[in-house]
Image (cartoon, rainbow, N blue to C red):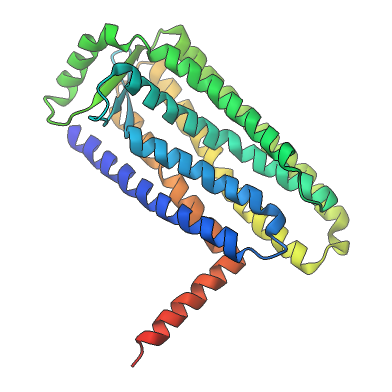
Length: 311
């Protein structure tokens, strides 16, 4: 099992670094190669990249993995540079905040798109920042209960280490560990709030999408070609964005069942975090691909490089 854990850690580290590189490139494309028709949507494109980078930063710092065994939930962190248990817990809590913010930020993009399209004027920054503040507040609430659930980890450290050693055997890997009994009330509240946030995110996305579609259908004939194209490109990107809360919802429900049914299948819990880490990289690649101006810029550069290599 320790070999599987190492593979998952390597995959997570690799895709996180690739995701960081693609998102930095996306920042450049948004700033330099966004067309005037798409420009009003640039705040949510920037938001997309910033939230991706926050998650990547948290993942690279904590290198966290989850596990459930014998009625105990474990989070192991590859953080040999953190010796203080409180700092380790804060590192894991920051990771929880980042993934909660990652998911709760998606509805903001849908609402922003609808607010822009109904008047064709730029959405005020105060409105956008207010929506992000609410998303951040929800994320903070979720990660606060995570912190409360795992703050007593030292009290069950000996038992936790014994369980892991029996399952995995001795390991040369240096890691820090957080653990909590599945009966911990704060753990139940943390998981319950996470599920509730996902449900509310889905409802907001659905409502904003329906309202947007109705408005487009009523005003399609009076919209310019460039506005239609810009709207279509952003819509495709947002559809891709919905994959994040949908997938996180599936894996969270799976994890909740694993926790409260005391299923000792470590592979299920260990695979969750590396798979989630693919999203920032795929997110950025898909944004770059579906935005016509970005795709054209890259194609022209590649053709130019190819032309210089020809004899």
